[in-house]
Image (cartoon, rainbow, N blue to C red; front, side, top):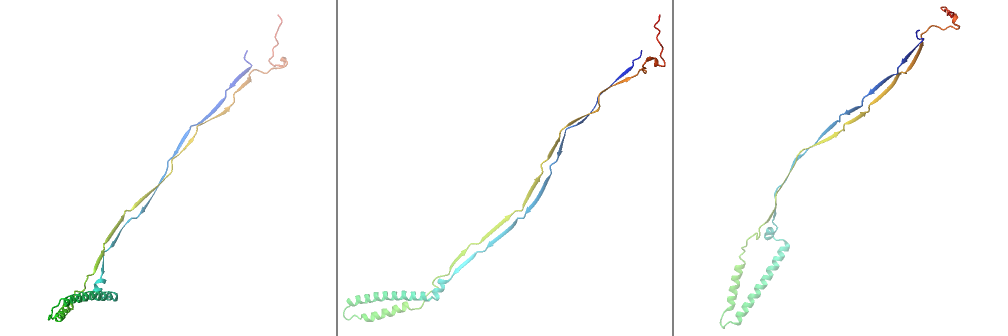
Length: 202
């Protein structure tokens, strides 16, 4: 007797997609800007300066009004002092004079000789020289080298991490397929064209 049904198992089908983890790295960039500051050389000189003051020298040759007044006043004072000394000396001689001694003639001769000595008109001019001063020379040298400036602008490297992923999808569900493989069943059985009655008699 052959089986009337056939049972077939349909297994489950699962599709799995795996995405691996990724670490992406972008390189950093660097920009360089170069600028230059120009230096230079500067020289500053100041020559020597001579100062000549001839006021006193010119004043001794051609005295100013104030100087002339002062000189005349000084000469007057000097003349008074000398005259006082002369008269005192002559008075002292007159007190001690002897009879018959001619002092007047001596006084006159001394006065003449004195005038000759003091009024000869010889003098050294100018009586003083020029006053000379000077300011020393100066030399200033300034040198500045060129300057080169480097300006770095850097971008940091970037890291991007993509985590892994697992994707499961069911492409076929599990199932049980039952198939009837026998012949048709007739009700009543006598309707079967191939029916053969069973002889139950002995």
